Amino acid sequence: MPYIIFLIPALLTAQLIFTLVLTKGEICPGQRGRVHKTLPVLVLGWVLVIIQLPLAILPLLALAYFTIKVKTGKTRDAGPLNMLSFANGLAGLALLSVLFRVNLPMAGLSLTLGAALGALLAHTLLTQARTRLQAFHRLLPFGGFAGAIVSLPFLVWYLSQFDETALASITSVVIAALVAMVVALLVWTGHLMLNKKANRWQLLGAFGLLVVSSGLQLSLF
Image (cartoon, rainbow, N blue to C red):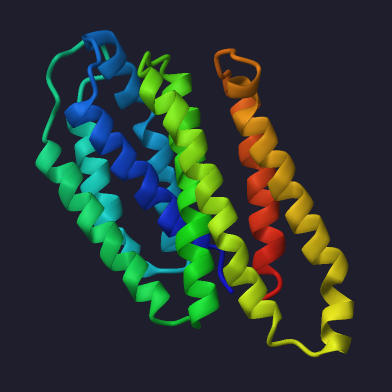
């Protein structure tokens, strides 16, 4: 199964969070410019998607257009937000085109674990941009935690289709995937438990672990 099954929902989730931040978040001109600076990361993500799904050229072009048009210095200019919304819609179509090709357990896992990856990616980029949106910095870890936990029943659903011999052969992979996920979630939410601010290295570490877990789970399909 191609990696885009997780990458597309992750990018869409991150874009939706960014859209909410740029339209509803109370951010100063400096923060807005720094958020704009992180957009190329999402554009690069869509470049990776195109390798497996040519249709992804549509959300890539829309997001790239928005990225080029916005200012990266101190600015109150929000840029062509309608183009960002258009990019979100095109990303949704790309996701649907992939989900229709997979079975129900894989589709559920894609939406839930992919959303957790996207929330963590957005949290990392917002932290890199030094935003002071405390509500987002508190809610995103909880949202991602919920997405990761909700993904587990879909994994169990898929594994229930294996016989005992097949299950025995993949047990180590399943355990490694779950351990990586649990550690990723603990690292991600660690700043909340310690009542500290999140830092980018902590979030990058959590993101790396969650990517490893996703890759291990993907290898099962």
